[in-house]
Length: 240
Image (tube, rainbow, N blue to C red):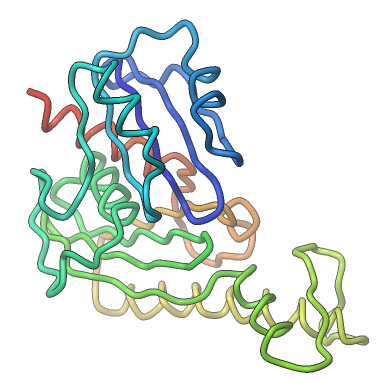
């Protein structure tokens, strides 16, 4: 069995695969050795891959390399089924690499825009097996926090659909401004992308993808597990 771990900025996703078949997916907020062992109880893990946008806790490498025959730590140096044209690959987030791998597995010869609406919103472009690069902007929660932290009086608000446009109070004004701003941004990215490319695919993922998906004006595929799927694909690609 394959173990896939995606350590994000706010939570960790753990998945188990039998080959390409996904058996389980779970989230861990408090990433500890005990919690991980609980999630893996009953599975006989032969191979594992880890992607992390943070420093890995020491117990991870100790636990994995001691108990799992094959372990792959994803980096820009990993063997990948597509070519990277990013000028600074060492700074490219492994979550972005994994999402592009998932897109490549689905559409290897096509042009694909991957939108990951998480802590940050990333836009990554895959063209005929070549990763061309992408853009990064603040996510919804980051924008709410920035308004609160960098002003004296604006409150910290939480994501909800219960607000007015235009905002008739300060909380509604922040909600309308941030949510509308992200919505306009994503739709404009897609519109611009569409002007330059034909017959392309759009994939949406990320923690806020489920909230954002109802606000996109273009045809797309919502794939919340594209990063996990991409990691397993990279693991299979490297372990042969």
